[in-house]
View 1 (cartoon, rainbow, N blue to C red):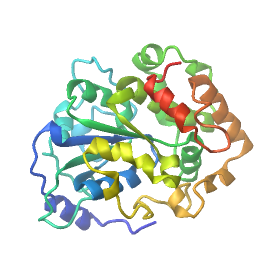
View 2: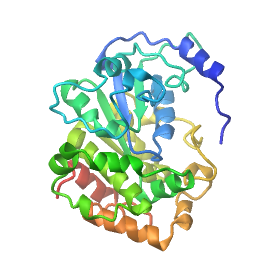
View 3: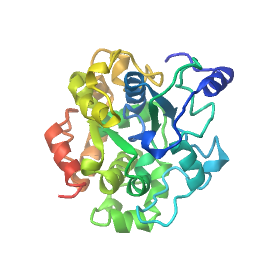
View 4: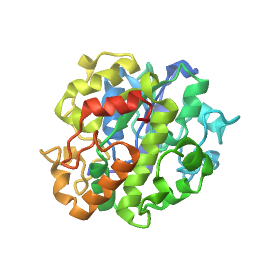
Length: 315
């Protein structure tokens, strides 16, 4: 894994940020579940579009201003307020500074960004609220094969605890996702719970800001066909021809995880998937209507995935 930035280096990057824009129109959101390639896309898109990279700012464990936005908290699009709304709006309008969030920023104080790209794996649960109230904010959502994210999360020791918090929210499980048999899944099994968390996050995304509102990127497809990145680039305001250094792994690449940039085979993670994990994922995908888009061999049916996205996650 690339060297971790020191606290002093992160602080220096935050101090050096020159973000001259103070409006929502210069904000873009990059969302996706954890271990889905969001950091790689942040770095590639921000580099090509000369966008200020804002790295996972909505961390209540690092900044008490986001204490009301517990990870996994669902916010309906018609809620009167967004928890921690003032702090979120400070991020969206470029006024926010934090050494953690600015760790990807340039150390050159003369770098004048053309906008900002806010990458966050917590966005799927409430970015629909932002999308409804601020149509000028651009959105890109990345989705990765759930078996790949399961492999990576398992290697890194991720806990399924967040899913249990999600499942305890009636507005999410009974209202937004009430047509899906989520409670019938074997959620006491850690692998099933992790795949279900992936499903809930992506289902919440597609049903609250899916369709034409957001550019959809398949990380798996993008690794083998760079033209997959074009829709996201266009949504962010530049040509895909400007994308460079796409073979470069992100700073979050972990050699022991399933990140495809850690080796030459983009589906090497399949060797770490057990038959039991495969069956667990298949049951979840069948229950949520994504079995066609994500076959158990690790490939992606891009056309089926787009149909699901355009239909807002409903059959």
